[in-house]
Image (tube, rainbow, N blue to C red; front, side, top):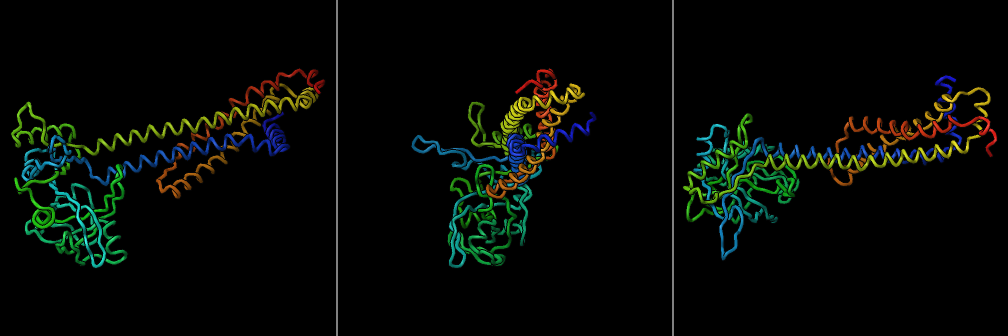
Length: 410
């Protein structure tokens, strides 16, 4: 019997009991669909981390002011203003691997526009802030050096602030009040979305650093040049670890810290944090795929179980076919084709189920999913391998039946 004839006989045998065939394929369908969907979810998580890294800015380093203690309680980083604008310019001037620096002040404020108001975060920034943080302007203009030097009352709004204060209106040229001080809206910030640690990056207002100190957030009584933090953009070809070490050494020297004293500032490399999260997402993707693959093994066991039942039910048929000239390899081929057909058809349906599940997850959970062609091919190939592996034993058992004993079987 040739291969095509064996395929036709195998397909005809599967169609005899369509319901049992469908139930047998169900395990493969669920397994393949689960693998594709879970890998899509995990890959989407990695894509979100990559987007977040891009939004933060390339090779970004953040230096935050130190802590202070009140009544024996340490209040956390940024509570003691130990950094200054001069520190920022010294870092940019004296460390060759630093491309640009941007000192910032930060504080919460109530903002009023017309009869609406909104509580948000106000940042006092310099013109260097935008290239350092890789933040684009979608409308209007950025803060200029003239704004910084003249302490002008201009503001750029994040998308969340625009939505809550102006709705669908164009905010450009409108007047808002920050802590009762009038500001003119001169620009709108590009959407950045939620950070990986849950912060709405668009719920912010940017104003000139000099204006923030004089009019809104106030300057430190101890040092009018003090700032909360310094954002630093390292050159693309630089070694981030070495750059951070040079920044630490320079700041310790400028702050006259003795070797036995702790740093009065905190250096963070956000790229490293996000890369760690990306690695975690990658491990999660592999874990999800491994868990989903268990469904494929369960489906394979189901195929083997049904094929063994089929061999028992068709014992007389097998004996009759052998009696009229069918060889053992013909019987082996037919049953193996039946098992592989169950796996392949189930795999094709499972691919469709996986693609549909990915879309449903993306829609309902508002989660980015990325379907990987490699995941589809791997899941389909694994399904075919399951069919061969779990179908071989029942097929071999059928091929080894004694024709005379098979014809006597009741």
